[in-house]
Image (tube, rainbow, N blue to C red):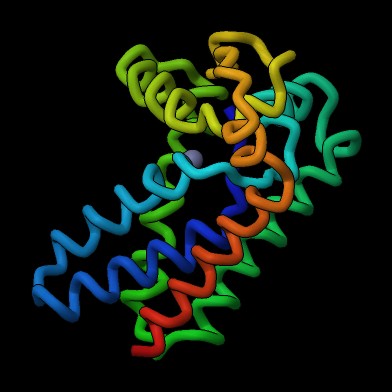
Length: 183
Ligand SMILES: [Zn+2]
């Protein structure tokens, strides 16, 4: 189970929350959809910069901050870039940052589960890993329980999970978000 880039989740969540709130005036629904938007994005093939969130956290616990500093810096930079993107491309209402934060809760839950595997979070962990099979497919060496089920080998499938496509899905999500936030 890995991270998808946080900034994409944050700006997409902000855009979904913003649009929902504008259309329905329902803050509760906007928050729920900003949260669900996370899982929606995870389905598409996506690039990631950590080998695995779990591996990074385990290494952090075993070897301390110094050896894992690079991962920590990347995650922190990613998070602040997410805030910056919302700042740059939106009307900057506080609500939008809130939607952005809501949209990375699933990754937060995964971090919590890795630190403390509370049984009531196990189903979430399973679900969160399972929906990312298009991205996991690239790393068949990852343990099966992390969602690395071997997928079918068709040319179409390989093209779908290839590097350019996984970048394009991220770019498309950011562009769609910017358009929604500026409307
Ligand atoms: Zn996720």
